[in-house]
Image 1 (cartoon, one colour):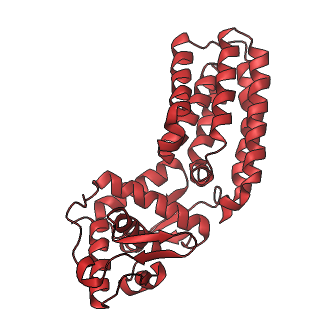
Image 2 (image 1 turned 135 degrees about the vertical axis):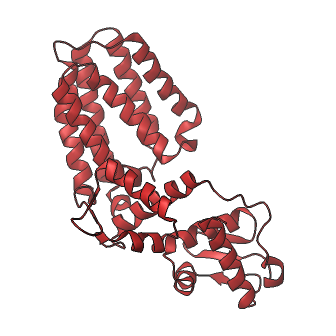
Image 3 (image 1 turned 60 degrees about the horizontal axis):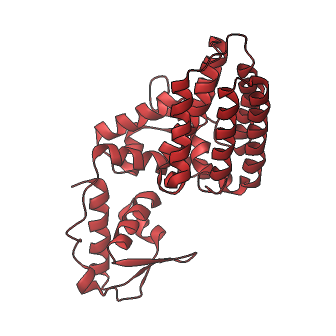
Length: 298
């Protein structure tokens, strides 16, 4: 049984044990305390129960039971245990969210993380491997792991955009800039995918990666290895706050339109104009991020 399905079963057991009736308020923190878990896996499990009609979520109030305990007391038969990769990905976002909220210590042992998120040894290793590769955690000498404070504040994300604002438009003006038609076509197809519904349906991972591929494709066309290496390093470490900013996706329509305009200019070899358009695009993103700074710190 997966950790997530196991948490669902434990919540249903609590409902039965407490003989809760329809309409009972299921407080996530209270359940987490009783199960000795963090709130993230509990909220995930309550979300699954909502999908199966066992509970309902009311905005700003939480989850409420839709069935009496004797009806809700069995796990829905069609709950499909997530794959190991899904569990690691779900835990990755839960950990990132708790770190940004200040609910997770900046230094943790593998055992603490394994217990906190109900993971196996292999899942814990995969989780830490991903985070380490992205550059916001590193193994401490001798024992445990330490998270980087570099990308845990809204200022860090804004600083990364200011660095990109200085470098990316300059890359389009490099003497050796050459961008293949196949690259332009691939980037254009990615933007059309988003405009045709992907903005709403893509995962945070997919949204981030599509944006990264667009910008890195332009910088790679400069042929300047210093620009390329710097931008790739920045993109690796900015993932953490980038995911949080994706809670507001209303700005992505504008992003796509701006990306397509830049591609059109590059296709016509109007690189100076494309560089100005890219500068304007990054500046508008900075303005948007400042506007949603509450999301970044909530």
